[in-house]
Length: 403
Picture 1 (tube, one colour):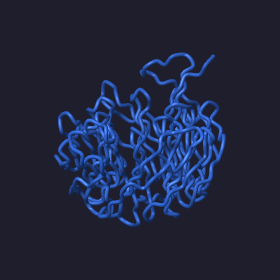
Picture 2 (picture 1 turned 90 degrees about the vertical axis):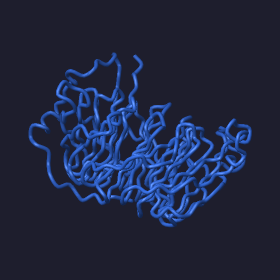
Picture 3 (picture 1 turned 120 degrees about the vertical axis):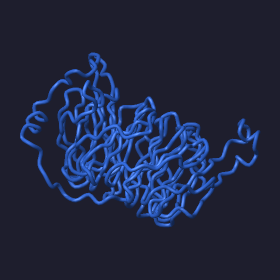
Picture 4 (picture 1 turned 90 degrees about the horizontal axis):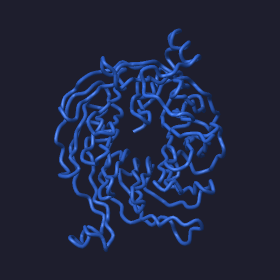
């Protein structure tokens, strides 16, 4: 589901603008080593730009011109590159993170929204909603190397951690496509993607998460009130397949009832639980990935649109699009422990590398809320940094510059 993002409504307060312009060292934050660099990249759909925020000095670093209506954004796990989807242009902008410049633009197809980068850093996958296809990008050569047909209006193509399976959600046909992915070769021989299975029955299929062991995928059926759980095929020589030969084929495990309009799935780093943002019922549902059951659904805030789990699996942070706040839920205690005010309509979330900062893009006010996650008084808003018109997504990249 594409959440509407109206144009910029309010400006930053004068004190915030002064702080953002001058910059400040993160007082009372962990020290960083010499040469350490950390940046957040914000795609601004209404400005056709990417805002680069310096997270060491907490200031705006620069603004980059990209294609029309930039939406999804992702970083390469192994190289210093950032990838921005330009939905109306049908292109991907590649940003060199070392000097924060657009290094290349790669054409894909009509109306892409998200990009998924495989763990090897060699390839990326883009679902093209307007052409009912998925593109495979060779990131080494910076070009499209394969295209495969999908269902109608594919919204997201997610690569599994083992890089064997690509799961594509088809919003228009209420279905899920699963492709086998050929191993990476510098000069690919034969087809890279092969359609392995397709499953109907997921109205408005949008977000998807895949477990760390690549055994299951969970898909948000956003036009209804369910999450689809799919068992992904195991290799014939794997332990799981030897125990149960049926596991060599993809199959639907169950449809789980959650709240209305589930739009986002947040997976705990340990893979044990998934948290579903139910935009239409102001709630979060908790799914056990071991039993494939909904263990709890609880009220959270107005129009929860996205959430993120801390690296220690203890805390869930939820962006309440309709309440201008972030809710903090203790997973260990099973209760809401606080709320932090943001700008107007918080949407996409990202942690800094050390998780002492949580960043929330504010879709209506065109800024980024910087929240301290740890302090004597508990989590609190630290400052606001300017972005562009209608920020859509955010990603963080950290590295140490060589002398």
